[in-house]
Amino acid sequence: MCGIAGVVYRSGARAEPDVVLTMAQTLAHRGPDGEGVHVFDGGGLGHRRLAILDLTADGAQPMSAAEGKVWVVFNGEIYNFQELRAELEQLGHRFHSRSDTEVILEAWLEWGERSIAKLDGMFAIALWDTRTRQLVLARDRTGKKPLYVYEDAEKLVFGSEIKAILAHPDVNTREWPEAAGQFLSHGYVPTPHTFYAQIRKVKPSHFEVLDFGKRETREQQYWEFPLGRERRVETEDDWREVEHEVRRLFFAAVKRRMVADVPVGAFLSGGIDSSLVVAAMASQSSRPIKTFSIGFEGAPEFDETKYARMVADRYATEHTEFKVKAEAFDLAEKLAWHFDEPFGDSSCIPTYIVSKLTREAGCSVALTGDGGDEAFAGYPRFTAAAAAERVPQFVRSLVHRVTSTATERPGDSRVWWRTHRFVNRASLDLPDRLRSWMTLYAPAELQQRADVAFAPSPIALGERYRQLFDEAARLGADTLNQILFINARTYLLDDLNVKVDRAAMAASLECRSPFLDTALLEYAFSLPAHVKIRGSDRKYILKRAFADLLVAEATYRPKMGFGVPMSSWLSNRASPNVTPGRSMEAWAALQLERWGADDTKKDLKAP
Image (cartoon, rainbow, N blue to C red; front, side, top):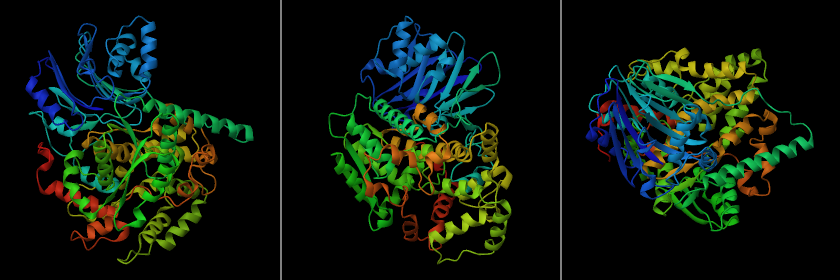
């Protein structure tokens, strides 16, 4: 895991080494083990290194091949690099290191743009080819690793985080007018946009090519979720085959993510996903696995540590747990610097704390259960959305008319508020319904907020959801896979992946997610709805395929998620108007107010 940055000038001017170095140094937390810069006629590349594979100088970046004709800086891990290396050696390529970075270079020399689709992992890549005078920027399939781009008529500037781009002395920091409204609606600014009008995110599953022979950057998609290819799972033989394949793919995904030249640990919540990761790690390791979990002092409804201990005992791990106190809210200021923009998921605070705990225990890598809910339908909203589709529209509209007049009162519980929102919005079409259930502030509420200079229309807010739904429906995906696809390209991409990447990298920790393995994801999307949800039983195939590895008391309990006691934290911070159901909205609004009240968004000095 590392941080990358760089610039390419359309005029062909050579970058100033100090400028590129300053950009890279803003990412020191992502790569505390070394730094490097390479400048050339046309620009420059910068790198900060977190050494995971090949800890010697042979693995340092920027790295070159073909006698300096091709250069690369790379953030992430290529999990199939050993297989690619063997294939390239058969084709006559010779390697000088044990790193996956060198495999990227040799693959480019052999296959060019086709090489990107061959890379299986989490990555953000910037490659400069002096032979063709092209800059290639590539991002992994699900958007695990971030990559931001600023572009104007004179130059293209890129970085793993926005702060690296802002360190360049000549970028336009004008804000995108719709950003505040989009953020207060979603809790993030949807890809490819950011809070800055001229800074964008490279899309997942895409690469971009800046060719000096052309004035515009070319964008190309190299992968997509397999939609509309659901297999038949009816007989007992069908079920046994699915169970076998899910187990095989999952164990292989975990094994690939345990490859490192540094200690590897695991986050353990006691839920199904993290429990399976720990079980698979323990079965493939000759040493006890180090596991880490956190709970919340004085908030048992948010505390899963007793379930984590059950799993830790079952697999004899070296387990560490930490109780988070309300004072952890003070970390919000520190994390605001790391996230570069307002971010609406308050669980970034405990994610940072458990990452820091893991790093301090000597682990540079941690495996997580992220992606299990997204691949195998673990969220209650998935069940609700699919169920609502089976209710005739006229019935849903009638219920909406009856319930829409009910108003929220300060004493109402979180359960009441969520139930009311679910029922009141069930009459909407599927994409708008999904978005509305994930919305912080409804469009009408945005129009009433004085601090939102430009409130997007409901159509603009839901545009991305409708585009994704249309694509999935056109390809013939069943209703549940439509829902999972929309979620993967919205919440997973712009909330979950961002949260884990920024919070973990703030502690210089690399997080790896076996459930987001390409082969496992593709297989999960080939399974019909009844394999993943059986009645109200979510992630059914995981419970069935791994029944021998799961701790029953930890598995068959209400889903908690990785929430935080935000209502009580905010109530103790002079926010008396926070109701149980609206604490996330208050958290988001507080961030936006701070963003607009000072100039810390442009202050590159780390806290």
